[in-house]
Length: 226
Image (tube, rainbow, N blue to C red; front, side):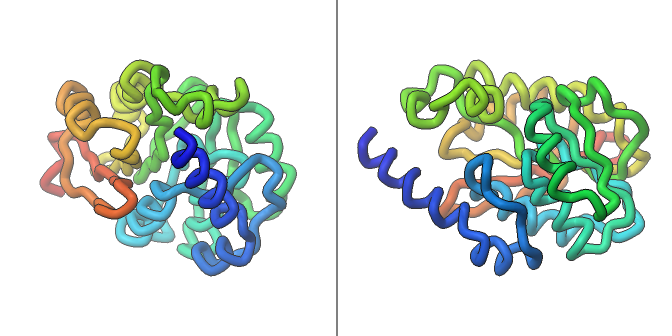
């Protein structure tokens, strides 16, 4: 536990560094008032966006957080014309709006799809995937807000299951979902089991064997050959 806490403290310094952020994402971030800017899954999702997002697509960045890193990367570096950033924590969405008043990104407070309208060509989700019974939860969830942001429920997959159940109704024909998880925290078989139960099909994966971050590229089965 002490070693893990040591790792988290030092890696947090890296992830909260504005110079490192600009090198990774190509623009200057807002002040880091809400903890680190990114995690390992963010980096893998960035790669997935580069491969699958085109400027004329409509993107939904689910769980965008206070810095809306993937939303702004899509808008400012990938030139995506239609970006929506959503998060279920009102204070985080308020900060994203406050620090990004001119990009044209639409920010919405929504518990997953509760307040989402329309359909999207691409839906990206850096899911909360930490087990609510994690032995490291004292370190990982020091505040109620941290728990709300990062806890994925029992087994770390309850929120993922809800997302997979509801997301297809918000996809355009031929649309894709980019589900990001870190298998250091959530079991690979548990996540794959939820994907199987959802009826969706994994058409590709991006894996980082060092950081254990993974992005599942998903489609509805009827669209899987598109």
